[in-house]
Length: 190
Length: 184
Image 1 (cartoon, rainbow over the protein chains, first blue to last red):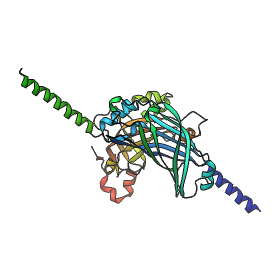
Image 2: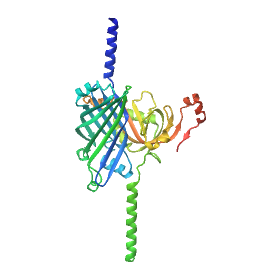
Image 3: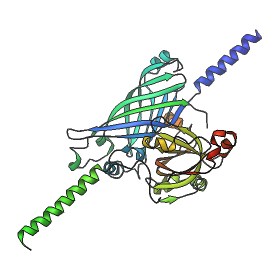
Image 4: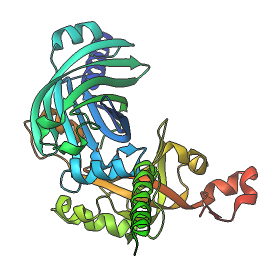
């Protein structure tokens, strides 16, 4: 009887600790591509802060906008100073929760089993000082203790008050394709 | 000045303009911070100032997109495509995590750097992440799982690299590498 009680306590503690886990990274990746009929360009950023809690199904990203690396120096300067105004708005953030919680949880046992899980998150995206409620479809890939968040989405610059001058409208698209890839490790705590 | 000469001068000016435009348009973006830095700081003193300043997000804006040079000790090396050095903030209880990102093309220069090594680097500041004070946003609360503040820098250049002396004493293969290696 004593053994059963001790085993029960240990199991409860193990489950409790699994639920309290937070996965995070400070070096996630985000890329974006702008495509128009006459020009295509992209930028890469390996400085994304991201976190995911299997307990609450909360997901968050924080992107230092200045860290986007372009091929062209001129484009990078225009992006930082004229479009995104990074001195005033250094970060873009997203804070959301997995929408189909029940399906995701039952499928994954709280993302403890290896596998690829299709999820939809709903949350608040803030960029260039403008907040918008958005829905992002993505994947949670669980592989041997590493949880990777991947997602592809499109945003309209005009939705976030990012003004593309008339002279640049043929070369800079209002519709920007974004892809995110963030492998997260179990947090060691603060 | 005759008409022919005027045409030649105008054509030359237009040609110089077009060439300058093409050069500027195709000039590649720098992947590492070079030249005289905008700021030369002691990392520990800088972090202390940022930590004690409750309005650090505002005062920090003077560093955004500026180059900063400092000495640091490497706490960890992370990343796949590019390399990020997590730097020791100086004092153990510092609530600031420091990330210094090197572009993928700089991989060869930083591949020898391991945790414990001392480095002198020059980076461009991207921002100081401050924890959210909102307790109604579970996502933002998640980000508070990190150190209370995160200093993000990229386009880093490795100026000086010294192997961890403790490692050198126990590693025979590193015995010849007792002198600092100056990269630039």
